[in-house]
Length: 188
Ligand SMILES: Cc1cc2nc3c(=O)[nH]c(=O)nc-3n(C[C@H](O)[C@H](O)[C@H](O)COP(=O)(O)OP(=O)(O)OC[C@H]3O[C@@H](n4cnc5c(N)ncnc54)[C@H](O)[C@@H]3O)c2cc1C
Image (cartoon, rainbow, N blue to C red; front, side, top):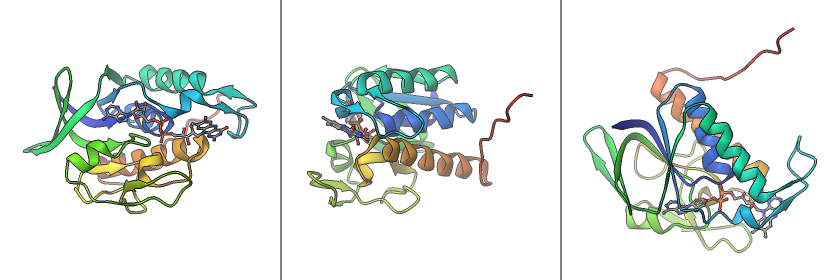
């Protein structure tokens, strides 16, 4: 079964991206191996949220994406290769095909490097290597995008979640052929 979007990583960047793509009606799969560093955080600097534990933020984010139809698979993505209709992602438990792939793997560039995607030195504290993504999130492999810590943005939940949303909006816009906006209006 082919997906419109396969997101690898279910931290703030990945789950936020999946929330947007699935809410836009794009068939979305998230593959995650439960190694989010966010699960070690206590957060008091996320706009609109007075305080929250990292584990709660990650769980709520996944539930928000699931509400709009995102499917989740637990396991490590070990391979990413081009196929006729897009990309095939290999995991420990199976293979999945998607038109677009969003890498949101946090500190891990293992999959990106194994797939021949261009990387570069990181600029943020303690971040050695990141994917060489442009301002839209495009990587050196067209159709594969990067969001969050792996894309080199400042390592804060509001920034990585926002970056995931930004990249998702770019992916949705490319799939639709026109710029996308998601505005729900307050019911009076
Ligand atoms: C101790 C600590 C405290 C922090 N405190 C704060 C704070 O107070 N405020 C703040 O804003 N930020 C804080 N942060 C930073 C914040 O957690 C990160 O900036 C941000 O949430 C990272 O989001 P991400 O989605 O890029 O990465 P992550 O949350 O790390 O998510 C990456 C996901 O990708 C998955 N993954 C990786 N490789 C694969 C693969 N090959 N296959 C499948 N899945 C894969 C991982 O399992 C993980 O779930 C803290 C971080 C730490 C460690």
